[in-house]
Image: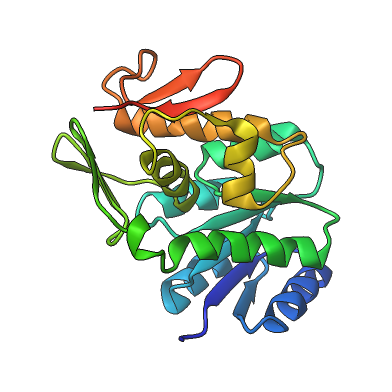
Length: 229
């Protein structure tokens, strides 16, 4: 199996050393940069399987870099936030990040988040690779492509995982806690807002009228479900 490549961008050398050591111990190939310019160059050269971006970078911020990347790529992105501020975390998700880790962080936690995201981009059982067609929505797990009314829809890794989870059981309601545990292997405490942000972003991409969705439906006070045919 090819070695998976990761690019980490942070202006703190101590953080980069921790990230590099923790991930290399798990067999990943790690490339690091101290600012957005160096990060953008590495991304073009390395073509990584996952990115780790600090929110606060000198010059262009990690949020701006994530937004730029999302114009051309669906590569998974984990944001690092020094302040532990919910605004940073929500902004990161809105700018296209798949997950976030708050500094100071446990190297074990970071590795766990990385592995969880990369598992969602890897092979799936045959039973989970069947194409789902619901009205004008087509979800193809084999190619990891989504289309709506014949037009391609570009989802982030976490958005695709969210949608695919619901698509396996159209009509079934999943709680926010279930979605978190399935996609991120984490406790739902304090993180359910992330699910709502992903749902909002997905509706902007999938629905004709995001404020009156026809496909990704809210189950009030509980979670989300995908419409049945």
